[in-house]
Image (tube, rainbow, N blue to C red; front, side):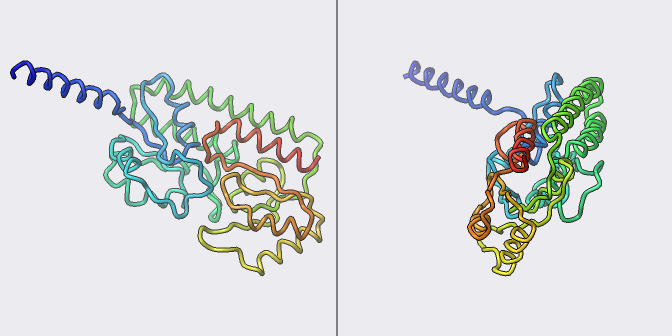
Length: 276
């Protein structure tokens, strides 16, 4: 009997140890994947752990609801990094217990109706500079690493700007028609503008009037390509394409599971395909 109890105690201790080993400490929780990637690059070599709150591929976070696991990530985190603007509305009440909450967008001049500034690497450079300073204030023992990593991250962002210049060299773009309202920063980065943006809200359809206006725009300006977001709905775009003969191509908000730099480069290649 004593031997049986002893064995059961050993098993219980092993299970407990395994559970503790699997539970990884989260130093920094970042609201989105892009923000988590930037934070990870800034904290490289420090031993600090970074975890994105939203881990699945999404188009937008307007009506996002946190899961129990995501709430646990927030509870464990010492620092929560917000993307800023209305991107993080779903975190409004979930971060009140955290010691440090950092709004990464404070170093960026945001358009009121579009908080997706990470689609412009020039804005990202401004953001990560401010974020490195915020992290240095919170973790002063790692300041030298943050400064070093910031230089390396800015070099990667400069490389992305250089790739833009190479990929889009000699290409004339008449403007973008998008079926997501978050591509103004990307359009500016690419040297063009958004002529019209139409987004289907979850659970509702685009109005007939809005569709008619887009169709007239595409026809009158002979726009050859319209763009959808990779994780969004393409129903309205298909209707416009059918009426106008425009081709549908896909752009990324970098909110999926792919690497930010790869996704941005692919976006540039998509513009090249559209307007070459």
